[in-house]
Image 1 (cartoon, chains in turn brown, green):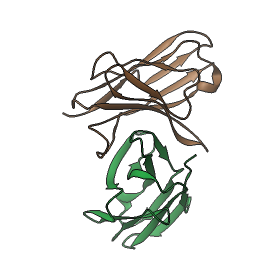
Image 2 (cartoon, helix red, strand yellow):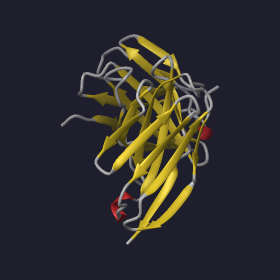
Image 3 (cartoon, one colour):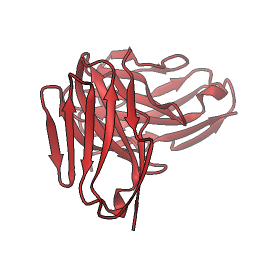
Image 4 (cartoon, chains in turn purple, red):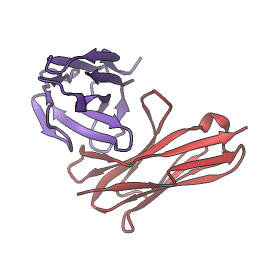
Length: 112
Length: 112
């Protein structure tokens, strides 16, 4: 089944403890993105990648890192999480510029 | 900076009605526009993608139109059903291609 998977789906952690949220797609898509969704602020793009080893900042990149070493994987790294990074995170992939995005199921992160 | 708004924020209609959801964007230099639905606690499902050179797209009971010059898109849902109840989001990409900006969404309730 063609899909975007994220792990973990739920995560509760403490301030400052490094964490990684994994994202993987099995559709051989070139493009991948990370978003966060917050009440009243909607979905905002964190980072995106248009190919292996090519990443760029979205609208809210501060406090996040990403890497794209393989086409199928695009992990989101929080080196020192803070409570303001408590949010619902989505990974998405797309075949290219003129194609639709496919979203993962989301990861609910709580930082205490 | 691109800004996307959606009107109304919430809508409640009886089953069987035709309805229109609106999306507006401030920068008309978009690459494409995509409509999504999001069910509570779930990820986003792509509904329709309109490329910047297109005026409309149709899928089943859904029809989306795009007027780039006025910065507007509409999503028309015919013969609404309770299963259409969800939040509907529009998103635009700028000329770069993958920097998506989302609207805040319209929460639709279709009453049996």
